[in-house]
Image (cartoon, rainbow, N blue to C red; front, side, top):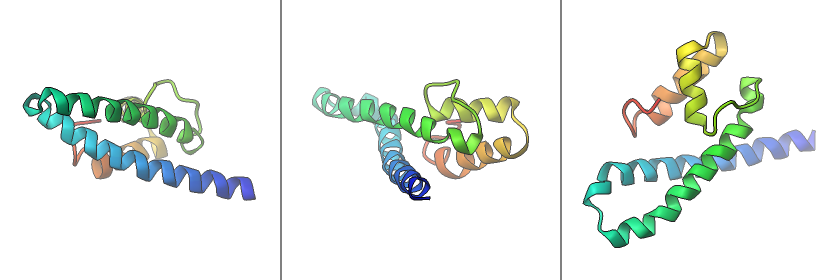
Length: 109
């Protein structure tokens, strides 16, 4: 039981941290051409951290989707389920995309 609680807390922490990074990276993406070289250099490690967090979150989402990941990031998995999925996986992917990701990057997934 304690392992399940630890998994749940860890997942929530990573989800929250990753979501904040996602919002920040989408802001950087929209303004990338307007950033100075110094700002881009400062932002680059943050973008790399965001990709690593996305990978970890995708692994942690495996029990929720009841499958091992086929893609590196969660967005790829969500796109696949929106294209080919059905049932709860499709509903979950639609909900995550429309309510969490697409508001910060229209058409993200």
